[in-house]
Each structure stands twice: as structure tokens, then as C-alpha cells.
Image (cartoon, rainbow, N blue to C red):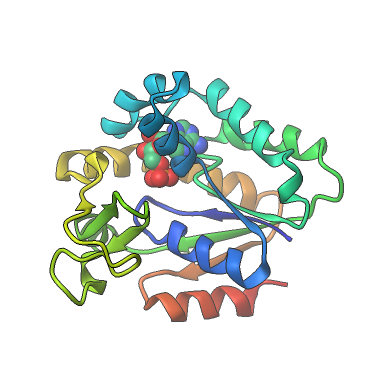
Length: 213
Ligand code: AMP
């Protein structure tokens, strides 16, 4: 199974991609996670990407193409994958078409998650990254103050630099200008599964599962 999960920042792509990867036993490929890991490790890629990510911009497409080409050809993806965060421009979508042609048996299904800006801004403002387990968590899901609900560690929840209010607005602007047109690109080529992601996490997963073939 090969899935692309599409939607604005903060709509819940990462959360749903994680759940779907467990459900179908496929690999969750998040380009944002790959870049954050490179930034943390201070690799050449990380050094190039850091400032761009912190300002809410897009990492150059030639760099992204190299990353996606390499990861999609990896052996552990042979059972399938769910791609989260790519493509983010129509040019990236065209590059992905070329990459997919080099893989055996591609049958991509596209999931589009939608929610109003007000919901997205609220979710992004209440989102934290646990620096111990690297999971993104919502402050709404926390039972004990300052304790990560995933790994139980204390005082490890931090705000991603790109979840600061002015960067959130910038990311939404970039989404509307550069990423939203990707949806029309796919709608002209294939069926797109559209799911209202304003609902509870479980309900959203259920709707996706019902609509997937
Ligand atoms: P995400 O975790 O998907 O929200 O991605 C975090 C940041 O990583 C984005 O705001 C971009 O700066 C960068 N990024 C992730 N995926 C891409 C991509 N496909 N193209 C360009 N930049 C990307």
C-alpha cells in the first residue's frame, strides 16, 4: 500500500500517518521529521535546512528530491509507505511522478485532510515536541503538567520554532500559495480521498479507513 497524506500544517497529517502506518504495517515517511533529524544532528543537510525551516519557508526542491528519491528506494519500504510532507509544490508532485515510475508496482492513493484555519492555528499553538522521545504531542492530551504523555519524561516538552505565532502564519501563507495547488494537480489525475480532519483523532482515522480501497 502506498499513500500520500496531504493537507495544511497542523491539520493532523503526522498523527494520522502514524496511526495508518501501524494499522497497515507500512513505513511513515515524514520529510519534516527527516529534516528535523538532520538539523538536530548538525549534518550538511541540517545546516542548509535549519534557518529555512525556522522561518516557515520551503527547503529547495532539488534537496528534497534527493531525499525522497533515496528514501522511497529503501528496502524497508517494500511493503508500502505513507508519505507525509511531500509533495509541497506542483513541481515536487511532478518530480514524485518521475520517482514513482522507477519503483515496481506503484498504486498511490491520496488522502487530503481539511480543517478551517482557526482550528489549525489553535492546534499548532498547542503543539509541543518532546525532546526525549521526539514525538509531537498536543497540550490538550496532557494529563500531568510538563509531563510527556508518550514517554513520561518531565520538563522535556518544547515548542517547535516554527510553531511560534508569526511563523505559523507564514507557513499557512506558503501552504496556500505553493502547496494547495498540488491538490488540483492530483484531482485532475486521480481520485482523492477527502476527509474532514476537524473531528476527533479516532473519528478521522475511521473515516480514512472507510474511504480507502
Ligand atoms: P512539517 O513537519 O511537514 O510541517 O515540515 C517542517 C518544515 O520542513 C517545513 O515548514 C519546511 O520548512 C520543511 N519541509 C518539509 N517537507 C518539505 C518539502 N517537501 N519541501 C520543502 N520543505 C519541506
